[in-house]
Image 1 (cartoon, one colour):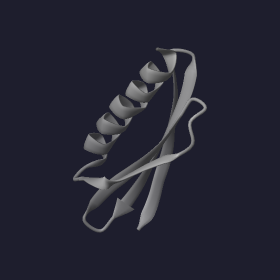
Image 2 (cartoon, helix red, strand yellow):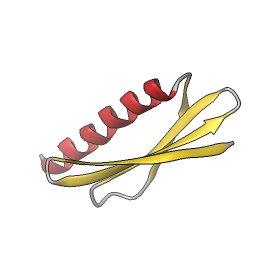
Image 3 (cartoon, helix red, strand yellow):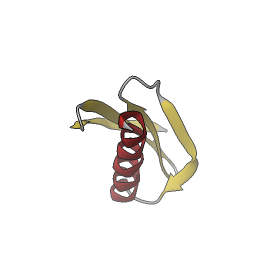
Length: 69
């Protein structure tokens, strides 16, 4: 298992970060959005970095949308 570079971005005035963890059989993610603590998403395994990246951005933005109301 290894960690790939963390992706950090701003969205709607909040910063979010996505960690990508490389496993033998795929990639899992964990997300920190706005003031929320890190949340692991280890129940979903992505075949490619691109798939993990897209899912991570979508989920981080969804979390921030919930914060913003």
